[in-house]
Amino acid sequence: MSLDRELAAALAERRAQSRYRQRRVLGSAQGVSVIADGTPLVNFCSNDYLGLANNDHALAAMRRASETFGCGGGASHLVCGHSSEHHALEEELADFTGRDRALLFSTGYMANLGVIQALADRSSVVYEDKLNHASLLDGALLSRAKLQRYRHLGLDQLRQQLSTDSSSRKLIVSDGIFSMDGDAAPLSELAEVAEQHRAWLMVDDAHGFGCIGATGGGLAEMCGMTQDNLPILVGTLGKAFGSFGAFVAGSETLIESLIQFSRTYIYTTSIPPAVAAVSRANLQIIRTESWRREKLMSLVAYFRRACEAENIPIMLSSSPIQPVLIGEEKTALALSEYLREEGFWVGAIRPPTVPEGTSRLRITLCAEHSEAQVEQLVSALAIGWRKLGSIARDGSN
Ligand SMILES: *Cc1c(COP(=O)(O)O)cnc(C)c1O
Image 1 (tube, helix red, strand yellow):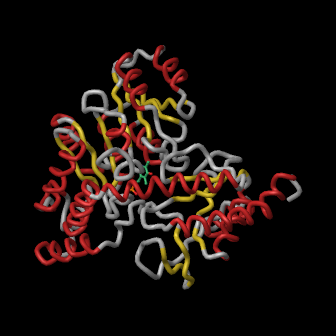
Image 2 (spheres, protein in one colour):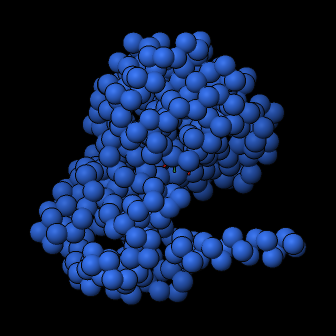
Image 3 (cartoon, protein in one colour):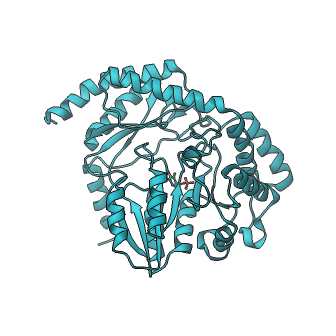
């Protein structure tokens, strides 16, 4: 069979399962009001939770830095691509997270691949929550360690798996705020389990940083986790930070080990210095403008109350990720399409991103949304859910 014929069969199957994914072309800056495929929409699917992806302060920083440093990073950090903007950002992130040091990676995906690959090998066991982000699961596969997955938030199962493990190196890995569910990992309990079984704990709080914790330090700050009980902390800069890139924070020895052994750190070009400058500017905003988190959390509460009043099946989450559990791929897609016709952009998340039968609308809130916009979304959602959801509930589709 030719390449195209063989691939076309898999594509046709995806389509038949209502799992086909499509891109919309954005014709405006990121924000709550966008133009997608030429149509104005109120955006409820971005990870720009604090509304920082297009702010004047960061734009000015980007301009200033690009006048000094130009456009491209030029080389990897270890060759000649490590600028003073990168360096200052690392120092500021270390201070922000209360860790000895922080190390910049080009993306969160690469940070997770590179950290697990550097810390685990064939003789190690990596324990992961079943709902961890794909990059964490892929990191374990790349490391060639034995991968043990435990039920979502399933501490008992994790304890049980660990109790029969005699390997010398054990790594427990979890999302902080889970990306498709919005719920939180029990960090203190995970740290206790790790200590009891002499395992290392790694948490990727891509969605918690900026949004929660008194100064935006994420779930780790909220749970009071220190470098001692949470030694490997990962964050991304493309979400609430409104920028691009990622970081790992931890001890001096951890960071030096990653610089020496982490392949996705060593063998890639540094992000443009002006992008690091954007992260620095937005980190300042995150640390000082707590009103953005307060506004976001009040919108979350407002959204949940409105959904409960309309019997919309929201999932248990107190983060800005507010998924509505639909079930069938087809229904989730139809609802997302209906909302788009009503002027709202909400993504339908389907397998394999989420488990079979748990297709959902992943609604995300942003500090820049107004209560009126949230109210309008919920009204449209209530009408759509009554229309399309009832078909799914009756099983007559
Ligand atoms: C988005 C995400 C990543 C990937 O980060 P990028 O910087 O976008 O590559 C990693 N982990 C989690 C939990 C995420 O949600």
